Amino acid sequence: MGMTIAEKIIARAAGVEAVRPGDIHTVNLDRMMSNDGTTHLTVDMYHQKLKNPRIADTKKLVFIADHNVPSDSAKTAASQKKMRDFAREHGIDFWEGKGVCHQIMMEHYVCPGELIFGADSHTCTYGALGAFGTGVGCTDLLYGMVTGTSWVLVPETVKFNLVGKLQKGVYARDLMLTIIGEIGANGVNYQVMEFCGPGAKTLCVSDRMVLCNLAVEAGAKTALFEADEIALEYLRQRGRKPKAVFTSDSDAVYAREYTFDLSKIVPVAAKPDFVDAVVPAKEVCKVPIDEAFLGSCNNGRIEDLRVGASLLKGRKVADHVRFLVVPASQEVYLQAMEEGLIQIFMESGAIVMNPNCSVCWGSCQGVIGENEVLISTGTRNFKGRAGHPSSKVYLGSAATVTASAVKGEICTEDLL
Image 1 (cartoon, rainbow, N blue to C red):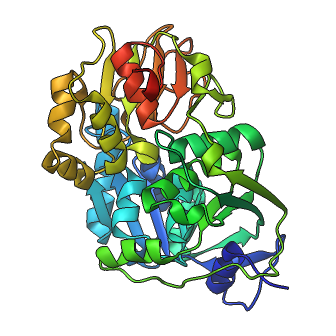
Image 2 (cartoon, rainbow, N blue to C red):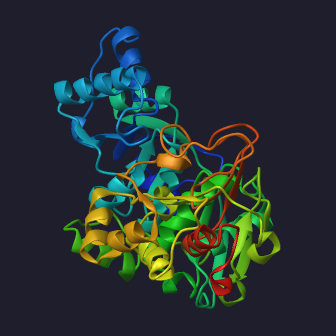
């Protein structure tokens, strides 16, 4: 019996020839990432709970301050200082002010075939490069730090066969929200979403990141694309080599299979307060908005900023709307400057912020008030996610968000 990509990565990390869903294996971790959301808790446990504190391999660790950057309070400053000092003391790679953790990891670290733990639920993003990335709590991260290992219950894999090609004005975010709307927020609980088929080959690495990043919103343990020539070229441009390149065997066993025709996908929106409350965007047009957000680990890359700037050029953000544009990393920000995109955003009346989690995190920038409405490219729209419990968050693509910012109400690109 053959194995899926996910099973092969786990088998490699466990040092065994084969694994099957339901098996429990001790695995060697290739990399671990922690951000300022919980690293201070991990550091406290390291000092206070361990009899013989040590770090197995500091080269496998990456600390990234991205959730509240720059710090928004004395309490935040203290927790970030604890993180910063610990990283300096132990020689751990530390990033601050350079971007969202998953974007940094993809730009500088992730390689195909790796098994990566991250203290953040959207670590599944790394599947865009054929790596098994999954989110863990700070206790599990601490165990990985100290031993270099952990345990994994091998998940089942669900195949998502993609055919066709996205139409003009339709984006990977529309596709993934459509998938989540169909299978539900619990549709693949503790399973792997494997994206394959001819349609997958039409998607760039940025598009693949969108799909893998949002997989956790359907309950997935992780999501994976095969590390094909598109992924390997991305790696080559950044001077990295794959740990291993795996493909699923022809006789691999899948829990279920779905087929999505990309050519039939339309612009969609997720209505408050659930990510799977997905409808065609035209059904929520004319809903007045107070704020729009273009950014996050899901939709803050250069491709998304290009879409937004192309719609904004020669137009103005509606007077009553706050439009926050937040590049996902410093690299993206600099490229956007070189391409003149930042100037377009600024001249239109948008507020361009430093690279960080920003509104998606709903803690330090752009927090929305009582009964306010936000249209966002962030990852979630749960009640109170971006501010007051009575506020409402709609999710849409970069195009839908930008068009809405101009019109002052939810609007699709073709209605501008």
